[in-house]
Image 1 (cartoon, rainbow, N blue to C red):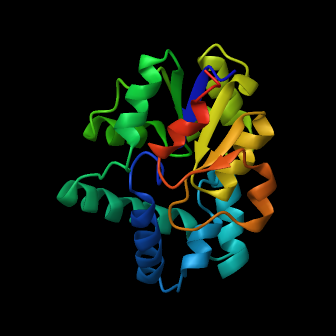
Image 2: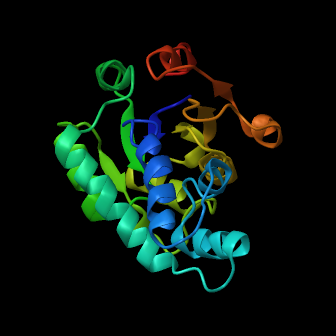
Image 3: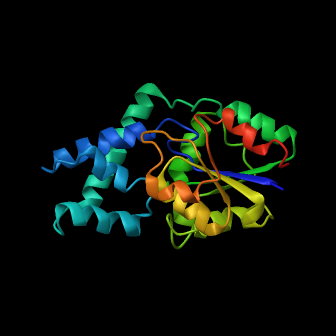
Length: 217
């Protein structure tokens, strides 16, 4: 039986992954590097200790990763200040569905705590979740399972009692390794062949994902 649901944030609850794609590339260009879509996709949901070596494997050891990351964050923050944050389709409806049925919910995001709280606050979702676990609250982030193990513990549940929702391969790897039921809601890319065996289900949006809970809660 499923008693908990744990959600990634960027690209799953809120439509911010497209901002990361746009502004990683712009920030890199500001420092003279041509970052392409595939480079950004490769580091989606990766903890910093994994994403920095990955970026340097693409562009060399001299890549100023911290400066580019800081510029990326500055550009994203300016965009959100101008345009706000769009909630992904079905998010609020699914949260209501789960709350009515007593399913405990958590966020498990690689994003730092200050930005996570700010983003959830901007969409009025701060009170929707029983726990929020952020990238700077664990010692090893995605694709390591620690963040999902921590989220399940915060809900007072075993990982096997939790459905984990992700939009990225690295997030799916983390959820599956933790022992959760890994469910993908694709955002920028479809499921990659190598992660398909790790998936319990794939749905086009969060509201349709309620089907997974039927007969399991």
